[in-house]
Length: 132
Image 1: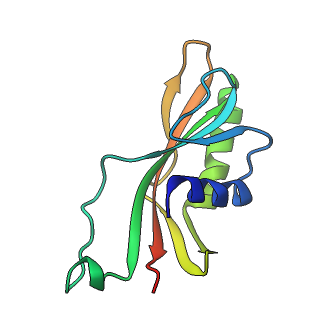
Image 2: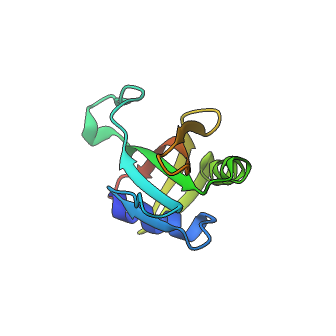
């Protein structure tokens, strides 16, 4: 399941209120935007006895960058709302079962950009049942 497919799923489940949502990029010109990226850090890949062919799930390690305006309270509230949706959620996509699992205990504030727009990140893993 690639980033575009995961982004499609997120558009269905996330409260994004007209914010731009994109994979591999984020609009620095918008005050409300979500950007979905692969995460280069995190826990080691879980192996399966018998190798990758014996594993039941594929895992995507992702980070969601949230830009949400110049009001710090509203930005924090939105990041917590999104976290609540992604922290532990099951889904079915293309006939395969999957689930989202947050890596951190809460959204991580990363600061404000040069225009004063607040930004948060959410690290999470996506587990998707391998096709048969």
